[in-house]
Length: 399
Length: 236
Image (tube, rainbow over all chains, first blue to last red; front, side, top):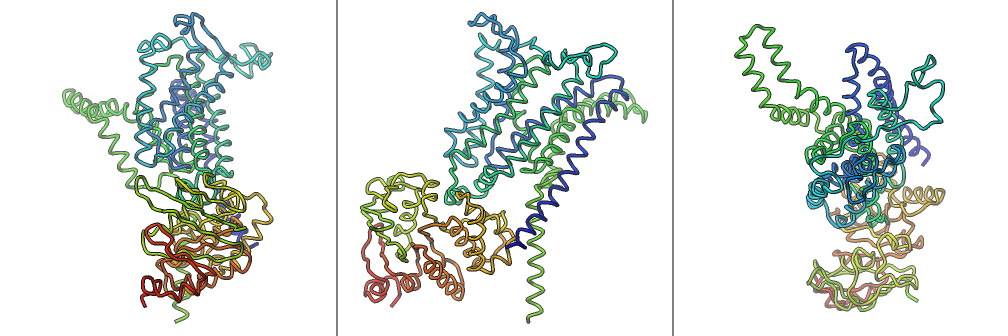
């Protein structure tokens, strides 16, 4: 017994070692990136990009709870993101003044961050409830429908939401007064810059990093908890899980609810950051992008999912859109005629999605288990292989 | 009073009736065997007891408590644990983690650890393979793990669904002797088997199911000697 516990701890230690390494690297990058990019490009455009990437990291961490931990395929995750964003947008702008409510709300961002979380979690439970009897493909189709319906609702209830005109002029977060002191503002002691966010990309960057860190700690604890084990069991075999005394109904509802709550967080943050929320920002492609981030990074492994989100964000929002321009300058520099240059750039423009698809296919062929697969599983597989070899050797000796 | 009692149970899959007025009793400390051919309703009976499906009429009671419409997780807590049909292990978890999952409803860490020791004593093979993932075990080892996992719930009644399915004769021998040992340590066993001969040998009592109806019952020995049973299930 004591030896069995020992090997188990040993295994856990090694897994923790790798995660610690990944998290330390991410932390250092997160600290150095804004300084380096501002110094190098003399602007904050890259920091804004990183903040956008950060919202996707948050979304991927949340979706990983549903897909990676509990094994429930959710194709409509962007719906919860939309619900989070609209919860903040409606109660922190002048939008509701022109609605039948005739009153504009300006609730503080920090409060709404949590309200959005609960609203999204509730929406997750609402979606979860009728889908609990469904499995696999059927569940995926219902979530797909949900993901289509929600943006349509925001689109069609234009009396309240502004519909196609979107909600604009969303309030910026401000730090509460007690945090402001001689160290804030533009005075000589300005350690903290004036933290009325006021569209300051660095402030938003710092905030998303804090949110991500909190999410990582939370999800890691969940994963190791009793609930985490129940999710894993349901993912492996639902009937067996029920036979072990796991209440599959509440466990699955919790997966949907908790997973959705992260996108509520991300949604409220997005609303504040971009200051404009429109139904078009939450279409199917967003759900799919986040899902691909989770699969690509290594389903079920939190650090892997973060890497997957960052890599895919870079590919989708940076590499691919910038490709025609890069092709043009490359063609120019090797001295092709301006005619050919233009047609080459146009061709790249048209092939955008093919290139994107090609990259996805290549990545999945090269690393089907994801960039950083769940190490527990990998270790277990390796261990099993070693044991089988040992057994085979023993057999040989015996005969 | 019987520990587990089914009374006049009817159960349906959609519109197809799988059980007709099935009445079965299991006394504390017994080994009871349910035998019958494919589709006779053996597994359905177990599913009705464990709450994975509910009877349309009739009642199930356990330890003096009606559990006809109780949900499965609650039934496990009450003390009925099933080693399901086809073993149903968690294939990508280790042997150890599968056993830990078996004790999911329990909080008493010390008792769980001592039950883990007990399982490893019953199945030394599992201790050797504790860090191996369950999907890579051999058939016999998987059956041992399924039984060990059910034991980890510390059940009053352990239900085994076809424990001998697909195993070599020598392993079947081992499995049944372990069933007997588990029973002698105080766990009541309800056994579903196609291997009627083996099952009736270890069982105190048995029931014969045919297309959802109990057609015969008696002690294991009586059933082994019965002409109908011999003809239909023992190939004599």
